[in-house]
Length: 465
Image 1 (tube, rainbow, N blue to C red):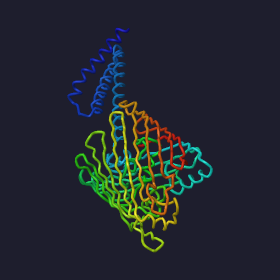
Image 2 (cartoon, rainbow, N blue to C red):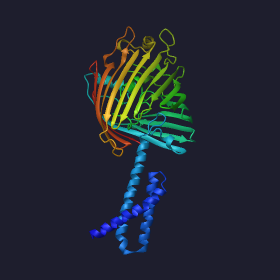
Image 3 (cartoon, rainbow, N blue to C red):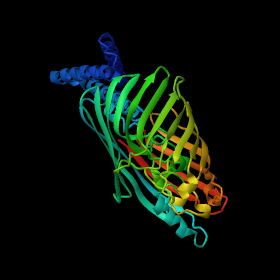
Image 4 (cartoon, helix red, strand yellow):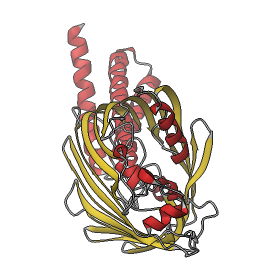
């Protein structure tokens, strides 16, 4: 019996080798198509054997059917690999799912992502819980809440795109936050694609600052919570109405837009987030310019920076009747290096504002409530994929150190609030069973000079499609 099986197996191998020259001779250069051709040939051979009704071929047919299963499995693996590669690909500064429309055929394209989180925030001292809750509500903190344990469907996002041609593309993002409690349009714009070096974009645009304002899908950054520097100094997610150019020239990519400016009426001692207008009947009395340049000439390395400059007064008047300008400039530099399983990021940001004393008076801010004349912050982060190269799966322990001060400088006559001078240490672990799904767990140790920092533990399930 064993001898007969051995002969049958050898016959199957011989048949595979016999079919191989024809398959290679007709190779298309597409591994999936080449394997599919071999599958079709095996099916034809099996059908011919079964049609002959020869009992002696039963063992050979069984072996050929097993070979057929192996080839079908290889085809499936290749298809999964192609899907994973697409899931990790970013086009024109957007996340993998957000840029899906550029890879699609003409017509409608649909993608999306979501985040479901459980979080425990440390209880603070007497009276401070109310302060934290008020701050979270007033400033619309995306990641933070009141002390205690919380379960939250943070985001359920759908991307809708339409591709009329390879030259004209519409793209948009509709975001449902906190189980639908808040609904917003994150971006909605038209692209006119001329050539790699120069393309035109107009509409509600994500500003090209930092890492996460454009690339904020949960599978493309480490940690369940976004760094504070990219929320309070770079007020992500930050979008405004505008237009501009983007493209690539050799190893450099760029984006440059004219947009409606921030609104200083929303600035606080805790940062610039409240100044975002987001396309909601936004005042365009004061405009701004934002530009970004990145060098990507070395595989795995991205080095670049961005600048935002404009006025934020938007018609706001000082108590003496003078219209305020509130010149606002934000500078940011960043570096990312990916090598084998290693991922390293570093980012530094600084914002400078004018007319802050008059702005404080217009907003009735006194004492340590002043808006910062200078806001500074940076973070460094490193992670290592323990499963690098294993079929799209990933297991990444990481660590991030972050420091920021939203009142690094205040006008004469005001004092800085010590709880705006912050140091964070985050350690965590993320697991990807496939490229499009991620499970994250991290612990953030929060310190400030007022000693009111609330540590937190977060578990998060994220996905893209």
